[in-house]
Image 1 (cartoon, rainbow, N blue to C red):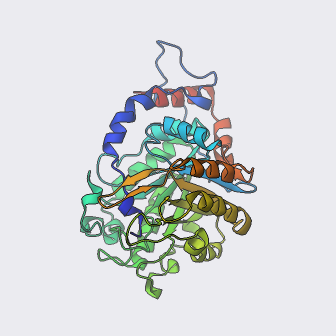
Image 2 (cartoon, helix red, strand yellow):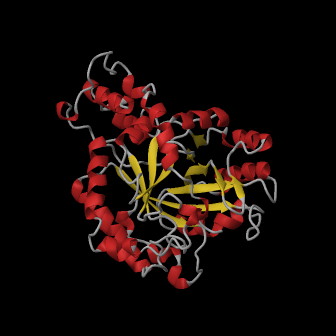
Image 3 (tube, rainbow, N blue to C red):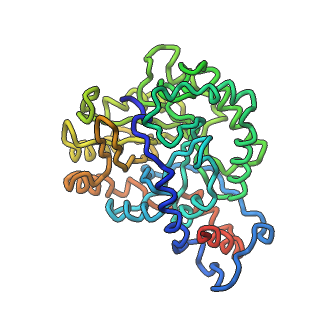
Length: 392
C-alpha cells in the first residue's frame, strides 16, 4: 500500500456527470466587461490575436501556496468552491491526473481556463499508461510494455506529446506539468525498476518530452519533477538522485506520501516528519522550489486532527523551503478498506484543517504568473476565454 495507484478513482463517470455543470459556470476574471451578450457568438480562435504566453510559476515571496486535489475538479470547478468554503481559504493550485491513453487523454483548454478564471493555476499529473476504466482491478499495472520508457524515447508518442505542447502554448496561461510521478516506486509502468526500465532511461524520457515542448514553444509550462517519499526497492540504484534529468529540465521539485494509519492491515500510523523528512532533505539540495504534491491522512489508527495541525505547523516552522502544499481531498474505496482523506472526514479534522491553513503564511490567492498573464489580455482575448469556459 505504498503508492497512489492503490487509491485511484474512476473518472469517466465523474466527467460525464459534471460536464453540463461546468459548462454553465459564471466566468470570474475573464468575464470583466468581456463576456459576449446574449445572442452574440464568441470570438473564434482565428479572429483573436494569439494569446500571450505566461512566464514560469514562481514561488510566493514568502510562505507556501495552498493547493488541492479535489475530484471532480477541474471538470466541475464547483468542487473547488465547495472545498474553499469548507476550508475557509482559497487555493492557488488545483492538481489532477490524466493518462496518455483512454477517455481523458486529451488536454482540456476549457478546464484549465475555468480554473484560471478563478485565480488558480492548474497542475496536471501526466501519466504515460492506459489504466482503463477499472484501474483497481489491474493485477499488475507495471506490465504495460507499450508504455515502457524506451517507447517514449523512441518517439512513439511524439505526436501526442506535441499535441499537448501546442494546445498548452495556444492557451497561453501558466500550467504546471508533473509527468511520470513516483518513478522511484514500483507500481507504475514508467517506474525505473519495472517494465524493462532503468532510472537512466527515465531521465532520458523526461528530457525527450521536455525537448518537444521546447521546440513547440510551450514556454508557459512549469515542469514539476516529483518523487515518492520513499524508494521501493530502497537501493542505491533506485535512489532519488538516479532519476534527476538535469537542472535545466526542471522548474520545481516535489514529493508525495500518505499517512494510511490503520486503514489497511499492511500500514501503520506515521508522522509527517518520519514520512517526508528524508525526501525533503534531498530535494532541498537541488535548489529548486519544493512542492508537496500529494499528501493526506486517514482517521484510523491515530488522531487525524492533531496530525493535520502538526503537519502544517511543521511545514511552516521547520520546512520554510517548501513553497507549495497540495492536499489530497477525496475518499478512496478499495475492496479491502476505505481511505477517507477528506478534510471533513470528521468535525474535529475540519476544524483542525481550517485552523492549520488560516495563517497568512499559507497563500490562497492567484500566483503572480497568472495575474501578470491575465493583465496582458485584451478585451477580445478575454471574451474568447470566457466563451471557452462557457461552451457546452
